[in-house]
Image (cartoon, rainbow, N blue to C red; front, side, top):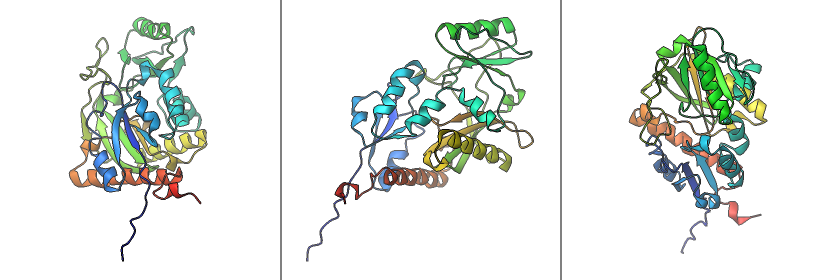
Length: 312
């Protein structure tokens, strides 16, 4: 007797990069293999490739030019049939004014002040960091000890139609940031990032693509107090957006300081580097399998599981 083979639906999955990095920066190189191991076939495309609109699911990974094409990018996120993380999450998280929402929810966050175009800029005493509220890869971020120079940089950002973000420079940044990676709302792994911003008067060094400042990364095993801040940030973001933390395929929480007084620096929900290369081979395979399982679960929740095409 000949057994019939199951008639399975194979969703078209795209990992989205950008024109300068259409296949990412290499850190996500193992994701296609991890997805294929679960029977999920994915390919890389630049986010602005028209073929992305025909995909069943698009996963943002290296869309690092969105800061220069924000309106176009956000419009595209709403046209894609299904996007991870979802469009409402992306729209909220692309603007660092989300930090005010997290601070209002009680998440210990680095003090931040925002100045829209036309608003007078106030610079607190001491060293500060001035950067655009919509930015990625440290583009447009500079340190200042001279308040006049700080105001001038903020004014230049405003003149380009950008909201300027002013933060006090926390000297603990010299020890690096701790990046906490979450998959489907649960802790995965962590790594440290050496200081990105050089001393006042100097600009960061960017990679060949010009899309992000070069980073020096190392594996990390953070204290539970840092993970607690990460969980609090995810919970506050989910509550603000009216979703569950498990609806977030991936998240990265960047923290400065140690267990005595950690502070949230950024919550990355759009296109963060997840630091896979900082894991040993076994841990990387294990955690990328969790990523693939998260994609599989999201597909089921979207009605794109293997039997979804059969109807009722």
